[in-house]
Image (cartoon, rainbow, N blue to C red; front, side):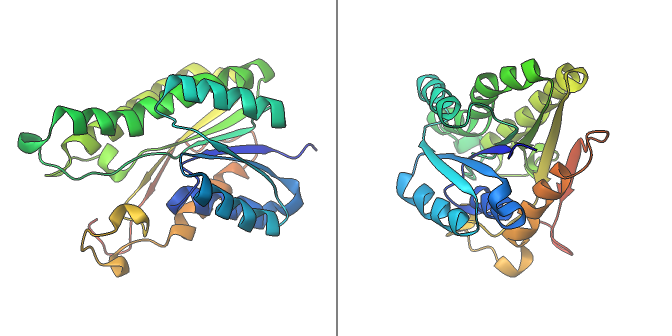
Length: 237
């Protein structure tokens, strides 16, 4: 079987980096990774770790909220790997701000980073999956895409948008051989929480969340997991 090509956005740190490392660890020489993010230095560091585990890896510096940047990245990925078998729309941004004090700029920034980016990357990559009649898409939502909380004006709006867009994608693609899974993690140890004062002991380990992506991908083509909800044991984050 050909080695699957797994494209991961937001792969320079946090959950995205851990997903890349998990695929590399589990499949070794049997996987090709396209790692996408804005921070080239961090991407190359993650790529080096994955390469040591046997994966074939390429990095693509891209602002996934920018249409031109995404189009250029998609062309470069096709030149390098030809196809994408698994798309992990992980890129996002977290900024806790109350509705009454949130600026339009910050609101737009969260929508762009979390929702617009998913739309742009999917529109660039998914048509080729449909043409081949096979593919897997993982869209990173959040518990904030299922329930609202104070201080989550922009982030909840963006992640509820991811939830809605994912449902539409699933309905439109399910008869075309393309599986769509939406992932809703609660608090996970990652740079997003730096400076928040939250206790890491109340959060999920990043490898646990990353493992869920890989395990769902490994299911037979007869099965689709539509939603994955992950929460810390005993936690309320």
